[in-house]
Structures are given as C-alpha cells and as structure tokens.
Image (cartoon, rainbow, N blue to C red; front, side):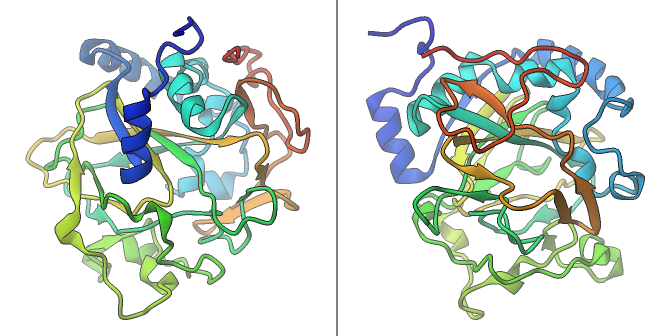
Length: 314
C-alpha cells in the first residue's frame, strides 16, 4: 500500500531497470520558474560563508572544489532540498529505510568549459588516498547513491551528464592509487586534457592502462531546470563540454546518500583533496530517513543556523 511516507518510492519495474542500468530518472522536483527564482535567491545567500562548516580560507578560496561541499549544513533551502520526499522516498526504496545524506556538492559548468572525464567512485579515496565511505562487513565495493539535480537547464550543448549503462557493477579504476593534483589539467589553454577531472587525470587510476571506455554505449542525460536523476557513483559517468551557444551556466547540485551502516570519513578528522584541506570538527551526516541504529557516524540534526533537518518516517 502506498502511504504518505513512501508515495514517491520506485516501483518494482523502476527498481529492476535501476539495478540493470545503474540510474533512474529524470524526475521532476521543481517547476522551471520555481527553481529559477529559488536558485537566483540562493546564489546570493551562498556568498555568505560565515556559518559554513568549512572555514579554512586557503582551502575554500581560489575555486577549489572543497568550497562547494556541504552547504546544506548552513543553508536552509539546500537543507530542505536534500530531505525532500521526492528524493528520499526514491533513495530509501533502493537503499532501505535507514539513510544518511553524507555530502552535497555543486557542479557548475560555465560557457566554454571542457567536459568532465569518464570516472567512477566507490570509496571516494581517489583524490585523498583515504576512503571517505566504507560499507560494512569488509566490503571492498559499495559506492553511494548520487542524486544530481539540475538547478538550470542541462542540455548537451550546456554540458549535461553522460552515462554508460550497466557499468556500475565493475570497477575499472583502482582507488587505492592516488591521483596527482595539477590545477593546469583543468585549463585546456595551459595544455590540459579535453575532459579532465577538476585538476586530476582520472586515467592515472585505470586498472588496465590500455583500457578505454566504450563511448558508443554512452547516453546523454538532458534535463530541464528542476529535474533530478538518481545513479550509483560506481556507474561510469562523464559530462559534455559547455559549447557556449548560450551565456547561461549549467548548474548541478548533488546529494550523496548511503545506508546508516556505512562509515563516513572513518578514522580521519579532515578532507584533503583538490590542493586543499578542511577539518571535520563541525561536520555531521544528516539522517534523512528512518533511524540510526548503528551510532558510528556523527549526526547533524540542525543546520549551523539552527534550521532542523526533516526526516522521512518509516
């Protein structure tokens, strides 16, 4: 029976397709006019970092990606976004009733920007060298559910996502290797690669150095503003370049979700990547569904501005 708490959960057929392909959607969360207005307001609020959990000036200045992390922990609109039932019902129908949102990120792409290279993420150790999430039972394969929401239109010309369906069950990269950060890799004018990875060359992690992704199987995931897609982080994914046919940027906002049994930032007190380091003293994962029956992750119940996080009842 469909209840108020589970009305957006994936159907049996949708779950079957998700497990086969590694993704589901797009789904509509906001109407285009609504998200245009809300995002216009939010962009201005994000300039105020006084309540952000990561305050290290060297790490969050200069465009480093760490500056984009976890603004749901201080901004009300983003705090409500990651707990929307349209998202959490679908996530819980895949992961089970007890779910954490352990990270959020912005993914802007400006006119003329290059595409993002093919990549997968399992433990998210690829940049820092240390696992950022660990599934229970000694599992060496897990990943996270990524919910990528288009805050603006995301067309092929503007740099929408690409997936290679069915690749989420096999890792083609070894995250125990460590990529080397070079900001010039993200700048084609300075000799960067056509599709880099925010200052890294993901090819450094390939298990087989001669392997190349089968791009003939790739599908482009165009979305209009206000839509979102759910996919495993282990699914091979990339993005097109922004061709600059419009002066508008493409903005994606991502929430990352795992069961409460997963350990988040185990045995570490900092995030080190993209040439920066930020401490985790003020960090907390958000319980978006069910109960935390494990107790091994720090949980944030309110934003740093004291706005409560909504939780999906089971």
